[in-house]
Length: 477
Image (cartoon, rainbow, N blue to C red; front, side, top):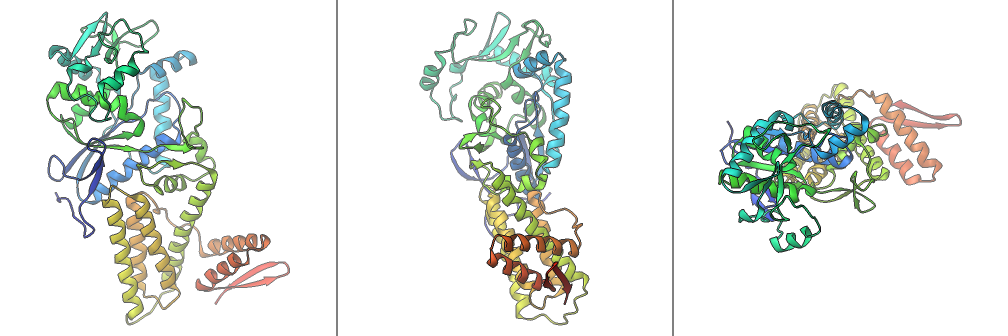
């Protein structure tokens, strides 16, 4: 097993929500990483906010694997929850039928976005035994209590409560006074087990028939597959409190060990400066977006901004992403076209050595960005810098082996981001015809600078344009 590969750009640093700063990444076991990402509650189609989280941590997993780590990547499905029960009752079907439908929909959406399946994808309903055992342990140790068939966690018993979210007990108590629940000893306490109601799924437990609370699910499943201490626990920014805060409390109260060494949270997808969410009703489902945009274009859009920063959704941004992706593929097509011509350069010159240096420089910029808390926007910029340099190099007297190196490096860096891996199906004729259409639109809009630029691009590809009364024709030099 390879150790952490420290690139020339420096060691890997991760922003840890727990410490609120970037830290050098050091796993619990050398060469191995246990990573748990909170998945979706499967009661409806996923929106783009879910897609952003999935894409962000997919890239992080890919990069960690590129560094040589053996990553065990776990992402759960919450398939028992109030929202699921309400939706199933509304639709007149059993909860398991509803969740099965939306797990399949989630898998389709993620495949379209290029998200790799997790190594382990546990369902909450398949781990009730582990949850009951964990709750029983918390009751035994005095951190939880039963009340009329419900079981609650005593927040004040856990001394470190609030350390992840930075919230004080006084602040939380002020907010909790609004809620009235006679079953709880303290308004801050949260449910570990819920007594079953009519028309709800239930399981047997020492406290009677019921079902687990939301927070206990991830603690039980992560412990089963990754042990008491995780290297990385991740999810959306909205999960910091209460979900992840409660996971810390119940897990550490049970084991007496640190629950996760690094906590990572992605920023929101916004529409008109508001978080995209189902509760606000301002969301676009991934499946609807995919009717208009290719999955790779959506993925590129999501990676064009650092994962912790908010990102604003709009058709304009998606259109721009589409043009950027097309530009990369056009360059790859142009390289293939030149390679297919059978370049016969016998000796390298200064131009070749300069371009080789630029290939290496782009790779190091890519690594530097990714080593700085997985900055994919810097990674994308480094790939575009390489593409620009490749286009300039192709205008000269390129060497076949160097062009091939550039193509392979674009593919290699793109693969870490899950981008630019499609086979180039378009022939050079398809690329030229598309360029001609773009030029015609530019001329109609009197954008003569763009028209001239496109003509020059085609000339660099060895294509000569001839403007006729009945349209534009082209020929190879």
